[in-house]
Length: 343
Image 1 (cartoon, rainbow, N blue to C red):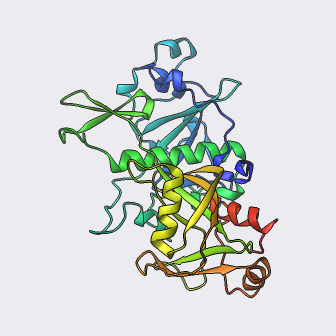
Image 2 (cartoon, rainbow, N blue to C red):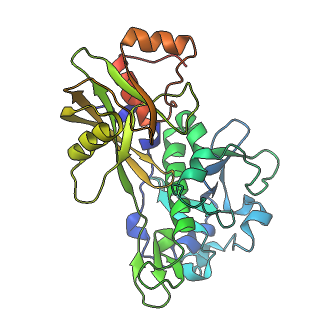
Image 3 (cartoon, rainbow, N blue to C red):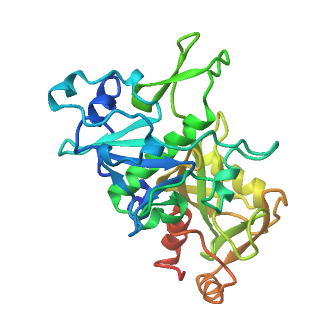
């Protein structure tokens, strides 16, 4: 198993699911000076000068971002703090640690722009390169994309940031009831949206996706290059699980559709939450029974087999840019390679 190699999988706080039904849990947390709040907006979190996730006390939240959030409730009022439906619905309960410290997320951005017609729902998250569209932060804080900083975060920071980014993306993309189209309101400390007309409850979605290190009988690794990527970027094959199919079938189908390679044995290797916007990446080692490659030209522009020496030399010459260090793709490649792979 390679689960421990996946930075965004780590977490050190209890997700506190049992507290979400308490209608006063968020309001009470705002009155506790020990509470820490993480700022999140469209795939990015606020970080400090050292690159760590900024975890702010309620009283230290920038007023132009937090608006009229109640702060500094007297201790004897905490048990009777205002109901959560009277507290800003941008607040999310992320968890509580063993010392009783509550962690909240605060969604500070405006409406997320919709992707262009025909584009995948996560296209903006994948392609955003500028932080200029994020709300301005006070001096000493900066917006940092989770995709960029994920591998460098502590276990606590990675767990909190991943949860916050995933919930923020869900809220931004699902403001209305899928049954009747009416507006929904945030309930259960940010983990449920309830329809204001028919009362139905709706929960954060997670889309399972398979990602696989495909290896042939000569122990070569199959890597592909997306039609949307730069010329030097290569990675393992991946794709979403379709309704009615097993994970193993999804692995075999995706590899065959994209490259024409037939896969036999499939072995589970680990998983990683990938909140861009709502994926759960399920990693596999797959054994190819054929080696002829014919890319589909739609999702993949190129695909080829690499020996370890070929991949190492290509990376050293900057001809191949491997997957990012925070990704399960990188972990799968290095699991096959036998150790760290260059840059």
